Image 1 (spheres, rainbow, N blue to C red):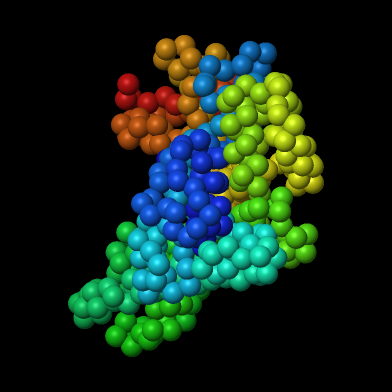
Image 2: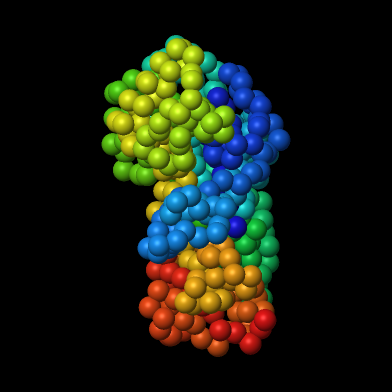
Length: 393
């Protein structure tokens, strides 16, 4: 399962975002370091289910009238403050928790109502743009420190015949999620001495920065847009990086209202309907929220998750079936499973995602939409329904 992590300074709204996205109860408060131990939960990305192209809807509990929600892991960890890579705040604990994340959601307080340490200040008195760069900087310097602490092993290997720096650096960074391809691409991008013993701190930092960008890409979540000055939001959205305007508090209110049966709302919808009786105060707040959603196309929580998985990580959704005509599994359930795979994946990659034995026994595959066999090198597309023929049962 893909893993996304929420990063950012304390009190930016990470725990509210986490609760809204997972509906798991966590501690939320208006002071720094409310979160100490990492919270792990399951959230979903949203896409169109293939059953929307058929008369009958599928049997998956994750499908809502043709809108499919595909599970991903969401991690909420302690807030990050300047100097975290040196151990300030809960920095080392925070950064270590990010090791296995595939992408980062940097939750920023777009209202400017909290300072760099996450302490409440008068709204509009702190520039939220400064909260973006320091998170990237702390992550880069944290990884650089890891490389520095373990570089001696690369130096030792370099004295052996047949030394391969790509292999040595890959071994060093495997625990961080870097692949051989990531390391190869990075070493072709940066300038460095051939002899690892001659590498400087600047060389190792350049390596760390490039590897972090490849393995931990970042989506900026401009949170609290419902109370943020227009000027701040406009400046955030004008940045040359992925920025999603969001109100995690608004999403949480909608999710809880839907659970209570007083609102008709599915995560990612651009609006909602009131279906029950509400106190005047709540009705007024929802009216304001509706205006915010109208301006930005929703609350931004679902859009942030989708941007991380489908845009930043460039994944797509594929549906394996056993019956190509009925789109069912072995028990007769219609489209029960959905897999997120990197763009460029093939049917054999899907087979391995389902089970290693099915991948090992892969023979061929059928595109259930066209009822035609596809080549092994066929690149899967978003929404493909695939029947895998394998020697494995």
